[in-house]
Length: 304
Image (spheres, rainbow, N blue to C red):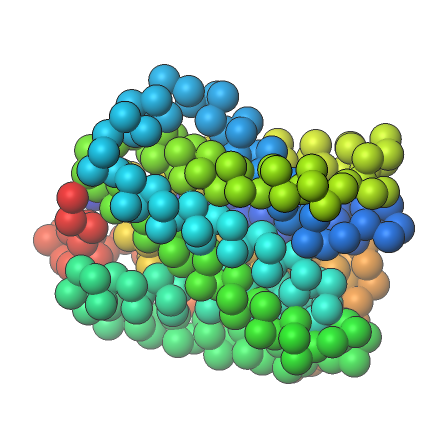
């Protein structure tokens, strides 16, 4: 795993912008569509697309017996994330559900790195994440009356559960890549394992309104753009970034999602929420700054 370069940071930020469109696009799914089924279809079919794109690399990873513990762990995270994330946005609002899921991801990722790798977070990462976490909290609180969904408490709980899933598959992907496996093959294999669970469940539960032309177009966009294309970018970034750094950079997603919720869905944000957006942006800038040569941030990598 090489030292991080600006291109790796740019890859995460580009992925985050594409991810930020998911809540708004899902909002315009056919009336009566299940958020749970939207999540299953997005990651289930998107995982298959990723595996087809990188099938040679996926085959090599799947044949590697030593990779399977991380594939199973990452696959569990890949199932947990969408099945909690999309319902969270439905229950707590696009802005609140999104920022809670993505805002908690870096904390859980750092906890995994500390517990499993013994890697203590750097001071700068801690400062950047603390600022961003405060921003996420302000954004969630200040996202206000009109963005709160039908069951905000359950939505918040699901948002945090999605953060656990996000951290788990990001960490597992970083471990696979650190072991010398390709980034495309590692991420695509993780999502393929998740697809084995989600696609059959989607079929058994029945797509309902998502089987319409409108529903199919919605799912096609979600599976191909914020899923397949974004995770190709994210996997590339994990060649050089730790999972905690990558998930902190990905806090650009809730900023994009919130702006789209305001501009397109007409969700209203208070002054407090706008201050929160600014804090998240500051945290992203801090963690994006190049580390000193030889510093822990530049040289940190998951063990093989």
